[in-house]
Image (cartoon, rainbow, N blue to C red; front, top):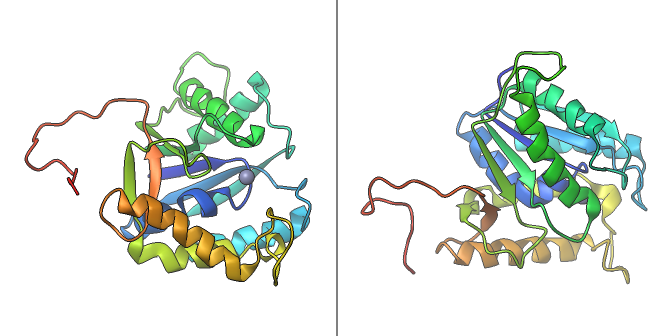
Length: 237
Ligand SMILES: [Zn+2]
């Protein structure tokens, strides 16, 4: 397997919520995109692991994924251990992605930021020839961080997902166990009707930063090199 892009996330539905528009756009452009879910989301208050697995398979189809797998780590129990890092590194060697998308390394939910941190270290370990791991060493060329769950972070860049917005929403709605059919008092489980407005308003917020209708935000740790300041992809709006 040789993926172009691999999204590594804590829970099934994290990719859909944080970067599905980008994933869909890249898949539409002919890139092979995969998702590595670290847990099955079994601690969620609603739905069970089996139901969420079915939902994830449906969402994969909507997004046009070339590959998806689940590492079966404990939900709400992702920790900074060598065992977990090696487990992820082994999959990186097998899937050989050129670009990896990780969740931002800080935030409210430990599973999310921990995935960002150990995912980064796993990418590093995967490239070391002398680590005791099966598979040929492979280091992704680029790591980008999806910051959607941490809206206070100013993105390094935003991907225009206007044309992919409806499909993104469709992928999110595959996780029907996570949404209430009607209004819900609890903020955690938005009603279906409310979901569209929530997803749209956040995507609109980031879209405005690049003069587009809808966008998804990302951060890179590295500084981008620019050769041509006339044709660089930054608009002053
Ligand atoms: Zn999550």
